[in-house]
Image (cartoon, rainbow, N blue to C red; front, side, top):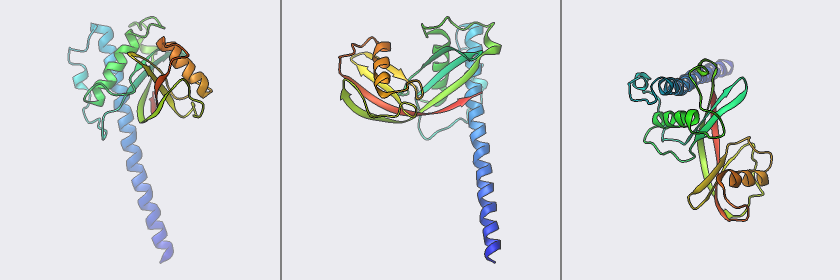
Length: 200
C-alpha cells in the first residue's frame, strides 16, 4: 500500500512538472516571437504600425509587468542591447517591442541592424525581477555581480549593467557610472536586480 501511494505521488509530480514545463516553453516561445516580429516589421517599414505585431498571440501574461532588456548577437558578437529596469509600458508585450526596436536602432555603441543581418540575428531577452533599492552612496562593495545587475542614478543620468557583465561589485559601479557620464566621486542611488534570460 505504501509503495502504491509512493508511485501515485511520483506520477502526480511528473504530471505537474510536465504541464509547467509546457507552459514555460510556450511563454518563452511567445517572448522570442514578439521580438522577432517587432524587429522584422521595424526593418521593413521603419515602424510597427502596420499590424504585424497584432498577429502575435496575446496570451503572454505575467502577474505584473516587468522591465525588459533585449540583446542581439550575430556570430557570437553583440549587435545591440537596450531596455529598462522599471517598465514603462502597461503590458509586457509592448515592453518587449519597445526594447527590441531600441536595441536595433538606438544603441550608439553599434551600427544599426540591417535587413541583410536579420536571418543571422540571435535573440536574448532578459526579464527583470526582484528589483531592490540598496541605498545611496559612492560605491557598492558587497554584492555578487554574476547574480545581480545594477542600476545607478544621479539626477537625470542612469547606467545599467546586467547580471554577469561584471566580475566585481566595485567595477560594476565604476562601469555603470562611466556609461552614464556620472563622475566616479559622485553619490548615486543604487538598485540591484535579477533577470530571467530567454534565448533562441
